[in-house]
Image (cartoon, rainbow, N blue to C red; front, side, top):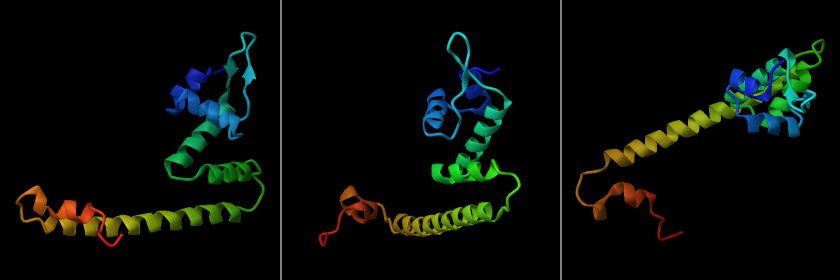
Length: 133
């Protein structure tokens, strides 16, 4: 038997996050002890570890919910899981492309700095709203 504190420590998850996952149905409501404390076992530990890993990889709560639902039916085809993972991979690739473009633009602004005063600063100029806006 694990308490909520034990579960939190074992999965590096805040207690409030565990309670939230219970409220939104990602984790089942736990059994209660005679003292009305939450009581968890290995299945809940495994499920929360799955949730944590999926969240660490950037899957949304809706995607995690879908993955959990699919993983609960071990006999079905994994095409739906592949589709969710593929959509997430495309989103990650887009974020990476956006970050590369952001890095290029930021580097260009930094490289254009010739020193001088703040009044002449290219970074401040690049960040300031344009007169056209």
